[in-house]
Length: 172
Image (cartoon, rainbow, N blue to C red; front, side, top):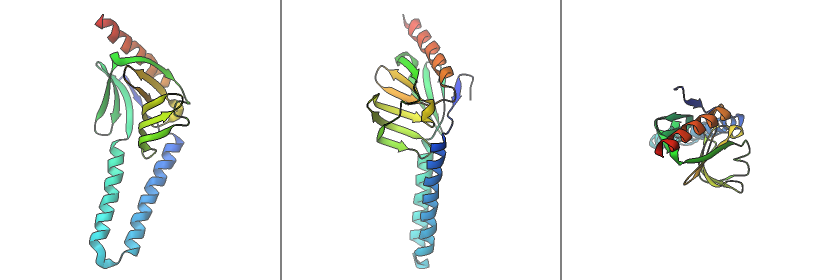
């Protein structure tokens, strides 16, 4: 990753929940191969492929890290980047409790990441791009709130404040 980049460390909870999900999927595949008659080989192959597609599909949405590229704050995924304009950032702060008591409206609640649309009393609706909720940084933007979890929350906040203020002052 680049100089203005931050890793997305996995919490113990994320490691555990991802391991459990994979174990359940592998168990289902194993049980299916044991219990479905040999004559139903096509069903076995199709179900196995479906399980692999689910794991790969969910894995593609995993968060690898965060960074600043040009005029954007970037969330690095496995095969793409999610970008947010720096000049849309209003405020950012560290809050290890930001995701506490959240409920998932739409998204992933712990299989490779905590991503998607969440809601709680503290923040209202927000988008999470998280791997370790204890390292939460809340980024309030003009049109949304996002929660990210970099390896160094204070360093990311300093970099975002520096970059967003320089982008906003250059517009004046």
